[in-house]
Amino acid sequence: MKPRNLLFSLFLFYTVTTAQTTIQPGTTLSAANPGQKWSSPNNIFYLEFSQVGVSSSYTLNINYNGGIPIWTAGNATTTVDSKGSFQFLSSGSLRLINGSDAVVWDSNTARLGVTTASLDDFGNLVLKNGTSTVWSSFDIPTDTIVPNQTLSAKQVLRSGSYSFTFLSTGNLTLRWNDTIEYWNKGLNSSVDANLTSPTLGLQPTGILTIFDVAFTSGSYIVAYTNDYAEGSSRLRFLRLEKNGNLRLYSSDISTGNTTIVWSALADQCEIFYYCGNMGICSYNESSSTPNCGCPSENFEPVDVNDSRQGCKRKVEIESCAGTATMLVLDNAKFLTYQPETLSQVYSSGISACRMMCLSQSSCIASTSLSDGTGMCYLKNSAFISGYQNPALPSTSFVKVCGPTQPNPPPGVQIAGKSKSSRLPVWVVLVVVLITLLGLIAVEGGLWWWCCRNSPKFGSLSAQYALLEYASETNRKKFSDWAYEEFEKSNVSAILDQRLTDQDVDMQQVRRAVQVSFWCIQDQPSQRPTMGKVVQMLEGIFEIENPPAPKAITEGSIHGTSIMSSNLSALSTFAPSAPYSLIFLIKPDSRSFTITFWEKYREGIFISAAFRPKLKPVIIHTICYNTEELEGGKHL
Image (cartoon, rainbow, N blue to C red; front, side, top):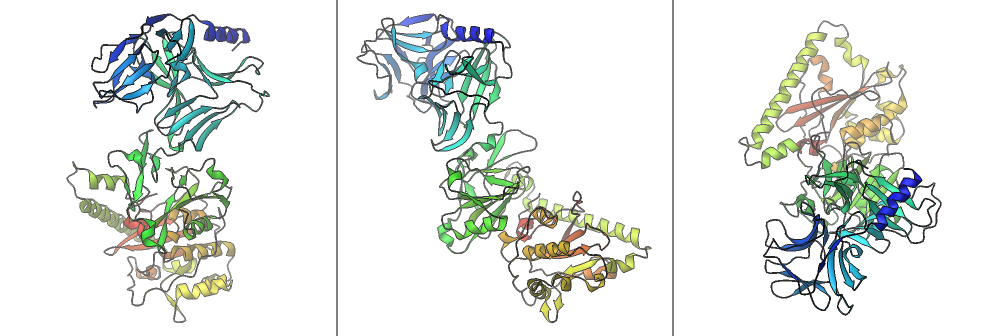
């Protein structure tokens, strides 16, 4: 904008003459009579009672054309019943009274010599002593400001537990409960000015502006609306929403259509406490509207009719002291803002981040960032707010009384809870499992048909190194023996001896062995997900040394092969182990294929293959550890 035009608009911003209708003391508005209102001369703004939903409660608002509230006497929770009234007393006070004659709100302007009241063309309710203004609604904003209204550093917009504050430094801040600062927008680093008495205002053309004499141009532009300078019949207003976001709106005077033209936070899930305490904010692929849910089935909604009220544990941690475990939430984070960042941030790996929280009685959750910073957030506060998104490079943990019960996939959850569904959940599961069996059978048949005449098929085991759990070595369970060799740094002993003369990347083998031991940990929360397994094998982050595996239960029955006898070595597994892993490492390739076999319930096999360094290729479905699989979780 050219300086001359900007100064001209500022001149208009401050000096336009307002028309007003005079209201005399003794005037009363009744909630029972919706036709009663005080109007601005241009009939664009009205002071009137507005019914709260379908309830019998009413708020007193200054409404913009079409019923858009820009000011409320008290706040959004200040209500009266149908017998309530709003009175302009002869003492000079404005008073909101309930049907029981109880005073709900008062302007506290008695003894100021108030003679008249008026609502001007800008939507400002004013009390005057002769020609001097002694009180105005613009000076005590609720959750909205409009053009020609300014916000000083002493004024605050409030909506529920959220507040918007304009600081004397020129910073715009959003806080939850007056403590957690989840948004802060300051001046551009190129601005060199010591502000004296800054004010924030909204120009009619759609520019959010800071005014101060320290600025060489007189103002600093914070944001433009996306309909900036379009149309002359629009009212733009800035509002702090009930959901904690700060937004600019544009409303057409003729049609009443109102649209969002700017938002402080583009991602609603970044707003602290949006889904309540222990709530997890996420998005559906088909919708941009956030959803609120619980971390797992270890939790239940506080209010089944309002998912934004958060969640609570079904069993409190105090009830399982010493036996609590950590629920794993992939691609999730617990929002951590000032002042929490001063006391809850540590540098540690993912396993240490989990264990630190588990070992500290005051910690209820933790988040490990995988963005290269190596940061770990330990949540010790009474309230935590979660966000889960496939794009988030982080893993979170929540302390629960075991066993952990992951949420079922959305489809299964809906089928189980929908009253209109005629298919029971067990029918859906049977269909899914039969489908998986069919896929496995088809693939096995195709593999055999394609490879039955191949000379390489009979010698398949000679081309791969096999790391097999649930076999025995020197009368020891393989996992026990392998861990002993691993502790001796004798990883080569675990490798198939037929590969001793091959060019094998031992660092790669060591990572595979470390991952194997993590996968067979007895505690479910210690086992990595398949997505995490691939990242660990690719060397994205350092793998910590795993604890020793517990011995496999005696008398466990080994599974049988579903392939030809030439592949019988690949089918042995231990049902009692969390995973039965088979590592197939090509000696002539830097990449390798990992195959996971899992026995699920009544002898059903599910398998998957990943090729690290390449895009994962899924054969059937992804095989998780036991808890993930039974919970129906999918990546």
